[in-house]
Image 1 (cartoon, rainbow, N blue to C red):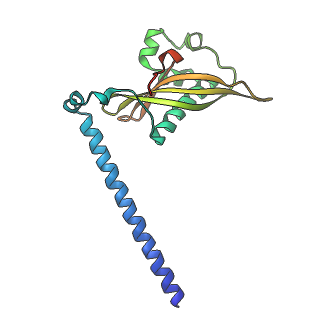
Image 2 (image 1 turned 90 degrees about the vertical axis):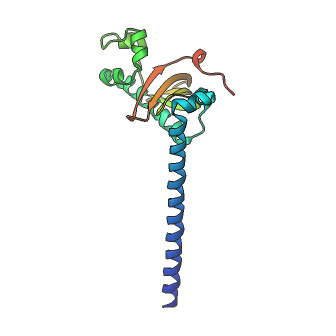
Length: 181
């Protein structure tokens, strides 16, 4: 009987500790969200020009979210899902390159095998409140029946719109990758 009472007390104590931790996390997240919203006002942007600077991505969630956006693009490219590719490609990129449903693969090329993306480095730039551009560098390697293909560098720019939970992608080059450190 005494063992059961001790176990109950330990469990209740653990539940209280977990509850306090969750409340603390929620408070911290709300404060961070408020700070980000405050930084997003034009008045604060004018006072804080660093707000618009390109910075290395340190947030793991953003890093892996953007990496999964690149992987999704590569998968759509391989499966030749033209309609989805047109939705994912950045509008400005499509206009600059006159991309249509009929010529998309002439512009972006052909992808003959499934590509495995491995992110290496990523920078972000605030474009507007809730909208960020990510400059992504990583490697791609074809997944072949007889093994893995040769690893090559891959660059992309991904725009995440947190306001409506969408993204767009622009294939890029090393020349367009920021040299910030």
